[in-house]
Length: 512
Image 1 (spheres, rainbow, N blue to C red):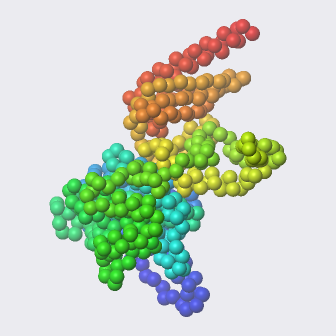
Image 2 (image 1 turned 120 degrees about the horizontal axis):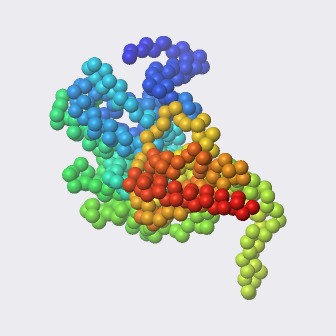
Image 3 (image 1 turned 45 degrees about the horizontal axis):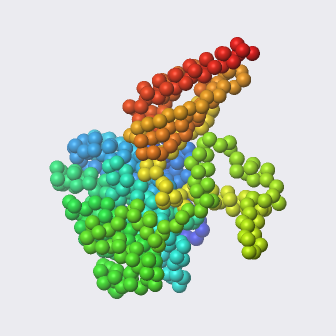
């Protein structure tokens, strides 16, 4: 598509025309949900990506990034089409509060070329690199608490990626691909970088002549970011340890704000060593040095680093309660926290600490600000305070269908449904509780499942006379709450439980 850009006038009128020109919609997704704008952006170097533009998600009303990969030779694309589809399907399953969200992808096939378009979350607040530069420019130092909180969030994301099956190696973790929002939430971008590199490597040997439009140039070739990459980067032996090395450099830069390059384009090993030695805290120094060890096998895992003395802390009861509340929010009525806090007597005693040798401490409900509590819950929900010692390796988001009534489900279905991931864990124990309403028109089911990794799952929904146990089991498989192998077993269990429940209801009615 060729577009002519009108001449810009001087002053405010010119700026207004420029803004209107950039917000012009130039393309739309096949489903109509995503609208591409003219404005180009940069959110981390990804090999083979032809362009990245701002776009609008018309359903959610938020800005997103419209990315394009252009294959000039359609034969190249056809040769790798299935692998590319698998790669994008895997990316759609990545779900973590500290990872930039991958929303959707589709293919655009023309006679002579092929295009892959994918939509990602837009990080408007800028990169960690930009934030560190501003902090240094203002002659400020890094707050140790903020450093620990950021390290924990980054490691939480890396631990999630490395524990996926198969493991996902980021391969491009730098301060340019880590983004920070105004509320302190850290998100890792360019998670698809490594997968893109592998896909491009597979394509190039077959069609070495410019198979992917533009130069395929991984970030390692950018001189200013060379020091983020481990010595073994790019070799056949590299694994998750390359991400740990990159994280170590990021953690070091966060602590010192910038590793001086002494006028050279490349940051030397000596400069990295000097930056590490400049840290006053011996635990921070040991923490960063363990990440950048030359031998990959000597570097700790992301999970191990979360338990390092410099980061590890026993979670407060407040944080544990907040995570419990949020993870079970679909079981609670809307605005339950707000309604509950209103019902408390401000002068009521919430807790008391008694001391034998001195006056005790009393905590009243008036000491807790509802606004502060709401903000804290929102921060926990957004991923600012992850549970590093209790987090599940693969969190499973609860679909809205299991927390809405039968009538609401019909109106809540998305016009562009996202593909669901599958559950691989086996159910080793199951219990349920059934309770019918007075009219007998519906039965409320609470289902308790114990998985083979000892984690528990609690689900609830309303069952109607027209619902069958087999349909309920199939729905749980569809939403990835149980594996397909457990479908028949659960259907039999539910059928037996419903039969017994109906029998009790009939005998109770006869007795009366």
